[in-house]
Image (cartoon, rainbow, N blue to C red; front, side):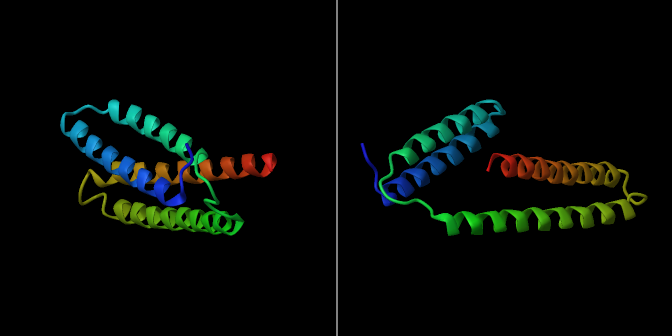
Length: 127
């Protein structure tokens, strides 16, 4: 079974729609583990369908632009997180809940930057 690029894109949209519908229902029912399993299953289905596509899905230029976009998104997200963290720390004496939120944002930004560094080093060694 071979798919055209258009058929693959339609299948991907249908899978995303079904996932969103299932996630909404499962979260309302307070089931938090089944969405993870569904996400893994949907990813496997999409990878299988992607291998069945005839034609070119992306070229080298698309990957280069995607890499630049990912780097910029990571940098912008980090800067916004740091600014929000400092603002929340500045107002921590007004509301006691601001400090734990600021700490959570600070650690999230640190984890994001560490993950980026490790993934970059790994991919740089592999290629």
